[in-house]
Amino acid sequence: MVHKFTITGKESEMATSSIQNKIRTLRFHAGEMTQQELADQVRVSRQTIVAIEKGNYSPSLELAFRLAHIFKTPLEEVFTYDPDANIPKKGNR
Image (cartoon, rainbow, N blue to C red; front, side, top):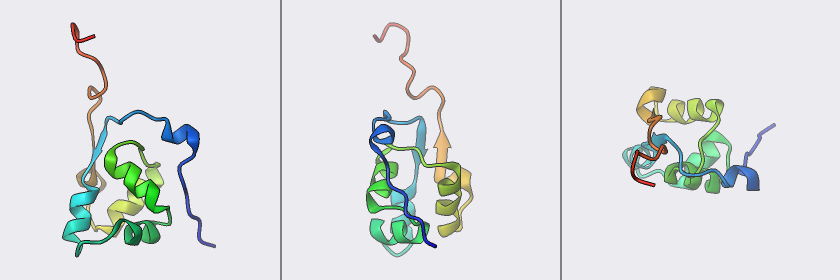
């Protein structure tokens, strides 16, 4: 059985994440793979790939590993985490 995952209303309300990714660049280097082709390979919707690329949605750990596996790239080269990215700096309120 093939499962496709889509983001729900609650998940789509997430703010831009502290997790950055290089999926667009990796797709380009993989023969200009389309978002739909990648979505089909990792069994999610194209909209989920769009949301991840834009930083509007953080993938599950399983999906992150599947994406890294498709590109034959270590997870930490596909995704990076900056814990301070969404924390307002003092005096910048």
